Image 1: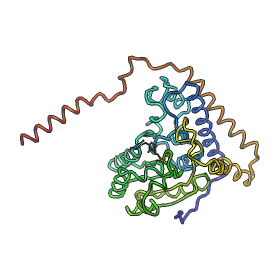
Image 2: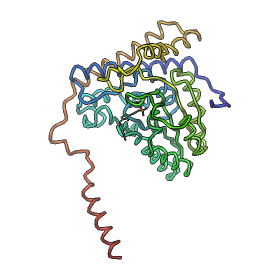
Image 3: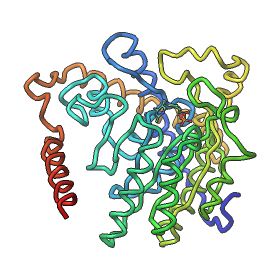
Image 4: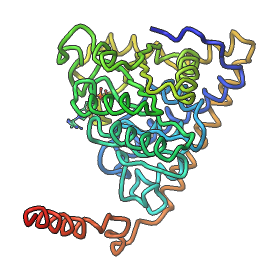
Length: 344
Ligand SMILES: Cc1ncc(C[n+]2csc(CCOP(=O)(O)OP(=O)(O)O)c2C)c(N)n1
């Protein structure tokens, strides 16, 4: 289903701005992978390349005070929500200037100052956190909304259904965005999914479901605009499935040999930045303006690498700073509560 009462379509300036965001994300992912191979970044890097239109088209309609949560493939969501590429690159490099002072890394980028609740390596725990945030907003009678980004692989995980149930029950201000790139690590998601179409599982909760072309930022942003307005107006949770394709392996070190190269090449031709450039040209924008926009984005990312290289490492003594130090306290409180229960 696509939204019916669409009376919005993005302007030329909107799409140009979205090209800039998509180019920032694409360049960030290229540079992040190169830096990983060069040994400057440790750990893993899950590139969002090919899927840029989804984070960009959705976040374009969010306010700074709104929230997003993300999964392991989270760089694009963070950039689209306004997290500084300098801080993100520092985080990947494990440097003090990072969003978590270099202690989180690629899969744990969070920046509450611009509503980025965090990337999350556990499938689909970013979604349950997003539902918690939406519940807090509702209890506090605030006006923000939450968007939870996750992959099609998450549709086979139980906690997602608990999240859907809770969101419906309390009519929470949340938009669920499923980025359907057809793969869960090395598997075609379809081959490990029972039933005709997992979207029926979502519909079973009574959540309105909408589908869009995740490689076309004009379509994504048009659909997102409508769904975000619904959520903002108190209509309760909405669900968007955006069909797309991840260009590279599951993570940068994965060569993706389980995929047919013809399938990959075909998908890469269906490039979201190309789509948007074609749209702009057919709406009168000169090609040099579009390429200048992309070059400006590349400069921002090149600069972020210089910043990351210059940023100091966190000191060894800071290892226990910013760590939740209440764990022990909470555990002993819990034991105390148990004792009381037993006595009673
Ligand atoms: C609870 C849990 N089980 C397994 C994994 C290993 N794992 C990492 S990503 C992934 C699949 C992700 O597929 P999808 O959600 O479609 O996202 P994509 O990688 O395609 O963007 C799995 C199974 C995990 N991170 N968490």
